[in-house]
Length: 189
Image: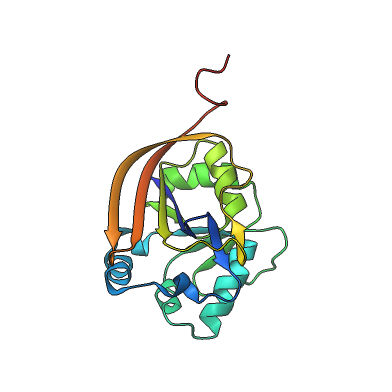
């Protein structure tokens, strides 16, 4: 069975994006970008929802630097609102229940799986017990006034056991965990 890794980038205060800020908050240094290029998961199939698909496929269509590497990677897009055919290469529209589909995909995929953005999809997969790794790259900015797309809102309580950490470019923190969804705070009756 293949592993599923949730991959997020966020500001220190937990936002996935911020109005007016450049991509990667303008802090995507050479070590971080090299890690992205050399990562063993760089070719792993990507799971995403409709909102992330719309955003990322538009960036790819506009020629946004860095998006071209995603063109050849299989992408599974979970949506009831998008229509076939999807225009971004290697994108498959999935209309069935994401939990059941991803459960089968973990058994059948020849490669590990990962997510891209897709906050609500990730939350559902985590709650269903399908997530093996939870990886967050924390960028050293606080975007309280301009931040949007809060990553952790609506999540259940989750215990995270650290399995890897790393600092890129002296400022970006990679934290990789094995998650365990909890019924509530520890010790609660």
